[in-house]
Image (cartoon, rainbow, N blue to C red):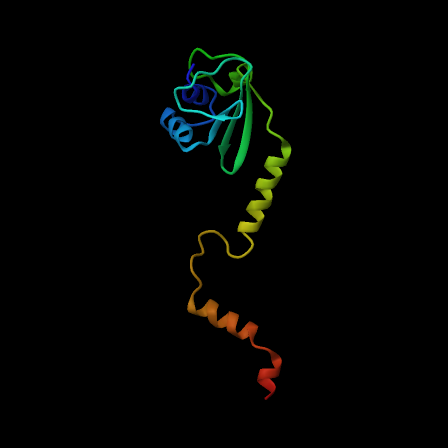
Length: 127
């Protein structure tokens, strides 16, 4: 079975087109080698998929006949992704939300003035 079809069948990517694009961008590796979308996978292969800044590692157990339901995915793959990958992603989320909340946009004039007032030292006001 083709690697792009396999990733779609075991529900790691939403569409086959997305799976094909991931392969073309080099986000998919089989046994450590970057692969094209047409590369066949076999039981025992280890797939590394970079998705959302996480390197998922998947061991192929069997090949599904077609796209399977979420409850049956475990029959065809074994997720061997280390837990550290998810912890790193959580730390990245905290770092991104530290400065400004998502959707707030650029600082306004009021924000700039508030920053200027905050940055001014008390010594400047005394003189």
